[in-house]
Amino acid sequence: MTRFYQKLIILTLSLLLGRAGWQGLNALFYLGTASALNSSEGGQSVKKINRSTEEWEKQLAPDQFKVMFQCATESAFSGKYNDFWEEGVYFCASCGHPLFKSETKYEHGSGWPSFREVFSEASVEYHDDFSYGIHRLEVKCGSCGAHLGHLFYDGPEPTGNHYCINSVALNFKPAAEAKKELPQVATLSAGCFWGAEYKLSQVEGVISTAAGYSGGKTKNPIYKQVCSGKTGHAESVQVVFDPKTISYEQLIRKFFEIHDPTQLNRQGPDIGTNYRSVIFYHDEEQKQIAENIRQELGLSGRYRRKIVTEIVPYQTFYQAEEFHQKYYEKNKGPACSI
Ligand code: FE
Image (spheres, helix red, strand yellow):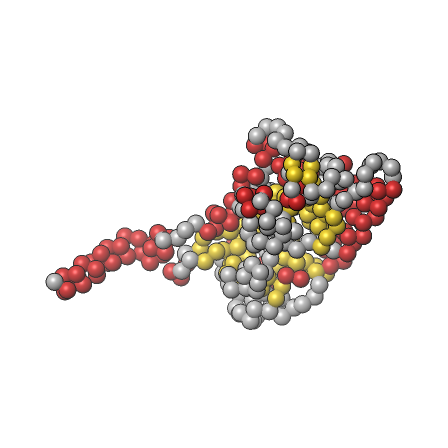
């Protein structure tokens, strides 16, 4: 009887392997991480570049083309950015889309440049890669679709993310040079994020927006938890803007216009610390600009009460559930008080 079962198990496995193959089996038990990661970024959009493979081949050096459009991998410890620590930004070597900041680069020891975070949610897209009989998350440029590397989860706290990227797919620019042409990120809380996201998305020079949670302690919070007030997060909007069209100062002035910064922990009928008014600054320059405008408006006589907007350092932004992205547009009209 035991032998019968052994034969049955071997036969079943052979049939399964024959039908689906090892990679197919991997796919069979796969839970859909890449699509979940991509859909969680539905709030931000980026201009896509569609060029033929032949066009890319003409534009790129042979080693770049091989990695970026034929999914090759450069040899470990061979890339120019593996042991490179200058301050600046890494752009896509094919299309110039911003991908990673130097401050998120860390020494992983694997032999390839390693980053713990992407430049913005719109920087990359994720694809399932079942090559070599294992499931990995392939990371591609969010604009031109070039292969960059893979995402693993053996990186540093708090996210554990490890973007393992080919040097040849990157083009580094020093901070001062990069800043002039880069989209910039602002994180703002002005009450209910449904209305705040819509109003900020309408500002000229805003490239993309995402609704989410900032300023709290709970990792990966869900809407219900944030609404309870126990996570400490504020409903926030992460804005990517083009500094060539709108300055951070102009954006902050718009932020003050779209809500009432004198209401403490509320906006109209929306009451709670999750509706507080906050500017999460990303660097000292943003902090200085925000503080100057808050002071100027406070002295302007425009408000009868004191401005209570907090200006605090940016820590993390957790993108909210897809349901909350572009909520105002999906539901064709106002849904909250701002
Ligand atoms: Fe690209």
